[in-house]
Image 1 (tube, rainbow, N blue to C red):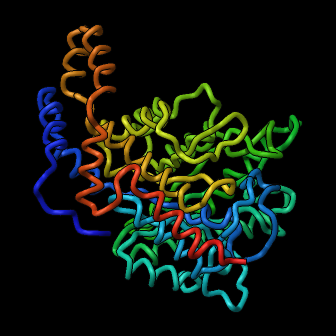
Image 2 (spheres, rainbow, N blue to C red):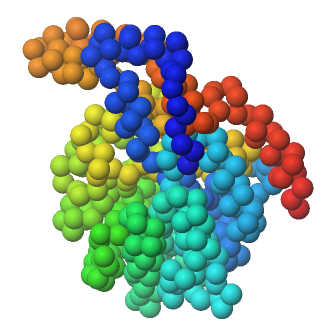
Length: 424
């Protein structure tokens, strides 16, 4: 990442700094925290969750990137080029989130249960040179053994064993990558298992899933370098009525087995608040992974907007006092717009939301709340919406040598013309 730009600070930032200081908010502390908090950029936005296996369509697993924007990455070099192009437009530290279907060094065609870190050597070497961290995910979809939509909860013990072995392999890959990069890998398990219509038996698939997950986490993998997480989903395309891996299932499992829990912003009912879940689950699980996304009706994977749910969620993170136990990643895939722009918009909005949370006059809010002065609490919360946070954001972009708002889309258009338009 670029070195922070040197002083002097802009007069506009100094004005904002004074406004916030009057409310007891230290903008320099907020900028320092933002500069130390990475966001994990998901590789699958760049190729519509295609991967490098050519194994088949993932839509049957409830995953579907809609749109036909030209220029989709089809190989490692193209995908890395696009990731770097987007990363140059995003201020502050970044990580890369990889799925197992993006094995770059698998000329021998090893199946997923036999993957090792060496099958991802190109990614590891690139991350070392670029100074990025890596996160990882087993890919329990788009595979012949997931053709009927079941993996870890499958009726067939042999199929379950394959996916157990794949998840163990992914955890071991994560530990190796983390050790080599000197940055722990967050390794997240999500499965598509479920039914389109009302099942006759809701319990049996969950009992099989429990057995499978206990086998996965029984494997000895260094927690120092591999941080495990499990991810729920309310429903998906083709599994509208029942998912084995519900929120209640995974919350109970994570609390009992002391593994991390992933909360994906698009995996809950529209009336549920992910922000409200954060302080609750942090009391019981060792690590929290956020997949920042945007649910729109039935589709959970729109590009992150700076909307109320996103601001509320990142404000909870900012005030949690547990940033060392929280990882922030993104999970959306939109093929209807320029994919570089999608990454940049999503990551910049994620970081803006975190900055707004860091700039809340939290001490005064808590004082008002603790004395029962709820009118002052509400007034402070509403007044904070009009404070010049955007001037602090511009200062952050300046210090990170990254284009400010309104200045970066030209880079996207030029890249589209010079690179994306020339792909087949």
